[in-house]
Every structure is written in structure tokens, then in C-alpha cells.
Amino acid sequence: MRKFSRQSNRHLSRRMHLLGWLTALGMVAPTTLCVAQDSASVARDSAGARDTAAVARESMGQDPLPRTHTVRKGDTLWDLAHHYLRDPFLWPGIYRLNTDVVEDPHWIYPGEVLRIAPVDNVAAVPTMDTPVPPSEGDSSSMVADSARGAGTDSTDALARGPQQPSMAEAEDAEPSVLFPERKPRSVSEILKAYTNQPYRALRRSEFYASGFLTENQRLPYGRVIGPVTPQQIKAVNSRANALPFTSISLEAPHGATYTVGYSLLLLQIGREIEPYGKVVVPTGVAKITEALDGHYIANIVSTYGPIRNGQSVLPIESFNPGTGGRAVPVSDGVRGAFIGGLGRQDLKEPQMVVFINKGREDGVSRGDLFEIRRRPGRTSDGMVRVNELMATMQIVHVRDHTATGILLSVVSPDIPAGSDVMQVAKLPQ
Image (cartoon, rainbow, N blue to C red; front, top):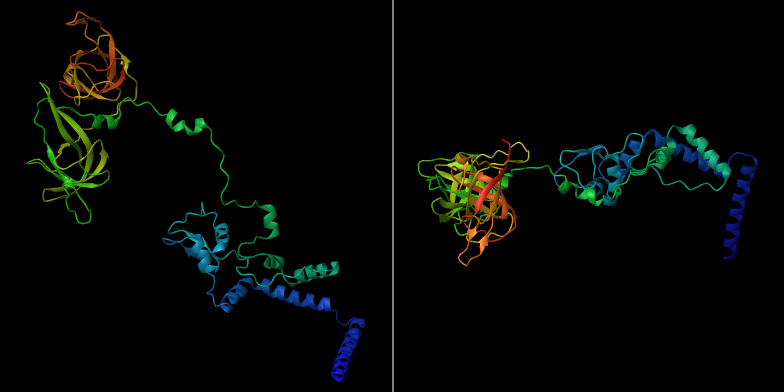
């Protein structure tokens, strides 16, 4: 053991002696040697950063990094980062390269072309390990001089990665925010959609959903056979109720046909009010989508009530929303009588549907305003009735001798049939 220790010390002493002479003669310095090696490596990496990235990926058993990727259905930035960069947590790097295409990193759409590889002056894969910070001031200046002599933008090649911008870019450009903070909105801004609605005297849904009296006319009724379920088989289930946006099977009246794209009013026949005919109660609107050998399939576009098999079908009437103006007061309006409502319910709240015994031939039009007033007189128990206001209504559907209205306000509920109605405002035509 002593002999071996003496030999080792002898060899070490010779090496230290030789290194001391070389240092004293100025032939080489350890720091200079390391800097020269690092400078040559920086020059080679700066001259062929993209080639080095490809070699690095191939040495790790990875495919070369493509420049772009066309988004397919089901793709996410998380999956693209996992596939190309082998780390799903690097998805912000791909997002930063495509902020001109991707507005929200949570949503990318098929057909979008995304850049996977950075621009030409950015290495897609780090070309070397992060250099150790120099311990002496002279070493830092020597490294900077060597890098400048080796080639341009070599410091960028060292500092940049797939997600890491240069220091100059970081100073000039503001950091991108994935989820910017939204400015809180006031209550008035939130309610703007409700408070600033344009005035509409007539509404399509009220026109089709309110119903009317048949006036004892024979109408071209078709028939609802039943809902079609499932739609792929086109089997008819006659016991189920039809839901919105589902398909139903229809039957046209004898001698008539429907065409694709034709709209129909689905309805059920209500009670009869003498002498004005039966009450038509709409349940929905359907549009013909298929027609084959007298069999029709329609898609439900609006619902006003339960839609079942056996209900009737009528061709839908055209609707004109009018000019958008307000009704103008009149002093000598049409006078008539109150008939009643859709059913036998008490008339005591707004939006209920009612009928009057005046129609198109009497000068009544959609949008006209009527007052329902109590007929003056003396009751059987000796009480005196005065001509007082009971309710106001707007006409939404007009036939030849009758009209349908919707109650706007109710002053006195339980309006009896036969009460006087008076036209107080007329909608400009």
C-alpha cells in the first residue's frame, strides 16, 4: 500500500508540474480552452439549428418535426403537443405560434392549418444544454466575443426553445394572456336585450296559437297518424306524444296532396258555440319534409299544446306582421258582443283567448283594440248595472263574421257572454 501511494503521488506531481509550466509559458489556459470549445459548438448550432433539431429528434427515436398540421375532427392542442412534442403540457407553445388562427385555445376546428415548428430563426428542439453561468467577469466577455465571432443570432439559438421567446422579443411584446379578464357589465347592460326591444303590434306566435271559430264552414282537414320513431326506420307509434323537432306521419284530405316544404297547422276541434261553429284549438306547426305515394312525413317546428294521433291538420294561413306602428284611437269604432273563450274556464287574467261576433266584413282587422264593457241594466234582485270597463283586448285573428282576441288587462273578472265590446283603436294598415 505504501509503494502504490508513493507511485500515485509521483505521477500526480509530474502532471501538476507539466501543467504549471504550460500555464507559465502562456500556451494554454483552462478557461480559454473551454470557451473555445463552447464557441465552436455555438457556431455550428447557429448555422444549422433546424438540422440539429431534426438530428436530435431522430437520435431520440422521434419523427422529424413537421412545419404544419391540418386540424382533423377530434384534435386538441393537448393531443398535438403530446404527439409532436412528446409532452402534452407544452400545448401553450403551439398556441403562441398560431394566435392569428386560434382565438380560443379550447376550440380548434377541422381544416385549420396550425404551425407546429417555430419560425426559421427559432430552434424547434434545444440544440445544447443550458450553459453554466461564468464565475469570473473575464469569462463572460470572452464568451460573448466568441459567440459574435462564430455567427449571427447564436445567442438566440441558445436562449430559444419551442415555447421560449428571445429576451428582446419578451421586452418588446406584451405577454399573451390565454384567458383575459372580462370587464364586468352593469345591470342595465345585461337587461338591455329585454328593455330595448322594438315594438311589435302583431306577433306570429299569437296569430297561429290563438285559434278561431269555424263559422260552420267545411274546412280541408287532414289527419295526424302519429309520431315517427325511430326516424331511421320510419315506424309510426300511435300512442306517443310528438315532441318539438321530431317527425310525425300525416294524411292529406281526400283528393288533396301536400308538397315538400309546405307548412301545416296542427289542431284539435273544441266545443261548438252556436251559431258560430266549433272552436279550433291549435297544437303546433309542422313542415312537410318527405312525400311518397300519398304518405307524408313532417317535422314539428312549433308546439302550442299536446300533439297526438288523430288530431286534424289544416293548410297554414299567411301572416303579415304589419308596419310596426301603434294603434290609433277612434271615436266611432265597431260595436259588437262578447262570445266567450276557448273553453269553459273563468275569464279573469290577461293573455286568455276570447271571441267576438264581429269580423272582416264589419271592418275588424288584426291589431285593433277593443274594450269589453258591462251592459247597463237592472238585475233580477233589483241591483243596477252601469256601463263600466271590464277588460281590454287586442284582435289577433279575423274571419268573415267573428274575430279572435287576447285579453291585455282585466278589471273585472268573470266576464259574461253577451257583454258589449267597442273598438277604441285601429292599427294603421
